[in-house]
Image (cartoon, rainbow, N blue to C red; front, side, top):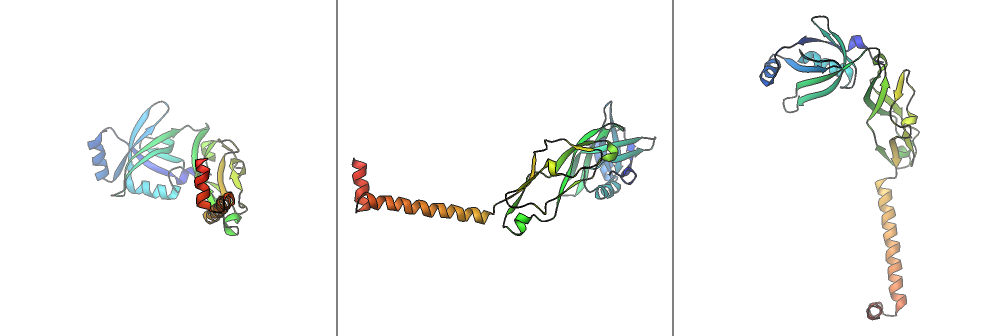
Length: 227
C-alpha cells in the first residue's frame, strides 16, 4: 500500500520559466518541475538531493508521491516523465501529473517475478517475459508499489496470465484476464536439434529418390529433365 507520509517532498513555486531559468536552478542544486493538473498547471522547483533519496525510497518512478509547498500546497502526484543527463548523471526536469483524492486513478506499476520456473529448472526451458508492467485501477491510497507473480510452478509449455495475478484489496487489473505475462518455451538447443533431425531425414529421402529413379542418379536426373 502507498505510504504517503514517507513519500513526500517539499516544493517551491517558481515564477521564472525557460531554459536560462532552469539552468540557474540546476546550478543551485534544484530541479525544475511542472505539475499538470485537471484545472491548471503549476511550475515548481525541488531539491535535487532530496528527490534522489525519495526515488530510492519509492523504488522507481511509478509510486504515488506527495508534494508539500510553502503556501500550504499538498498534492498527490505521479511522475509522468523524468528527464536525465546520463553522462552527468543528473536530473534535468520532472513532469508530474496530479492525482485527485477520492477518485480512482489508472496507471502502470512494475511486475516482479519471484521464484524459478520448474520448466527452466528441470526441463531445460527458457523463460519468456512478455510484460514488465501491469496496468491497474484503484484509489490513490490503495496503489501498490509493485505486483508480485510467483512462477515456481510454471512448467515447460505453460504460461501465466493476468488472471494468475494475486488479488489485491481495492485494486483492479485493467487488461483482459487472458493477457499473457510470462511463458516457458522450449530451449534453443532443443529447437536446433529438432531442426537438424528434420534436415537429415529430408536429405536421406532426397537421396533415396534419386537412386531409385535410375541406377545412375546423375544420368537419371538428366533424362527426367529432358522428358
